[in-house]
Image (tube, rainbow, N blue to C red; front, top):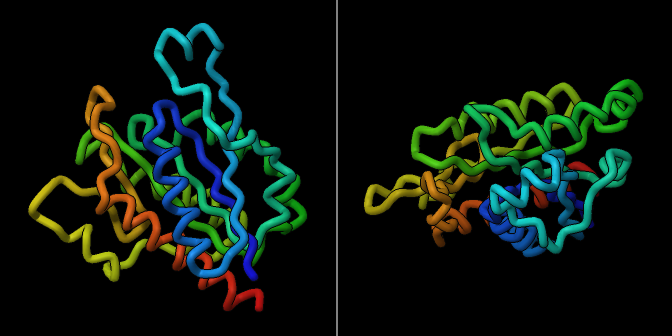
Length: 199
């Protein structure tokens, strides 16, 4: 049975919701799944003034936790087309794991959220995937077997590189059912891939 970590950062709950869907998909494929989040690095008064969602249920991860899983799925909102500083700060602490090759051959994947359709989803996914490749991980994206991302009937997230959602500039749009289905599908594929590699 594959052990999967869904590790995320979420300011306003969009990535938190996607993380839950990713985990649901991985569990549907028989994996044991933990959902954890990286620490908030913004000062408390700044986070509160910006109305960050600070009461999230997922426990705070420790960098050493990464060694305990067969697969790690990273989720971060975009920040000007790249990974959030909170996620970057967490991953920057993983040099010891990298030096020892602890994550070599494990499965990695990424998901994200942007304010607009053209807000940097794919570059953010690539910035996450770049970290995973430097760790020596095997990458699983979101193939077009998730047909929902081909829809022209509504605004949808999704890319071949990972599940995505679109939050709107004011954060009012929550992940749609198509976005959540993409997240579940990616989680399922990651779990199945890890099971094949580590069975």
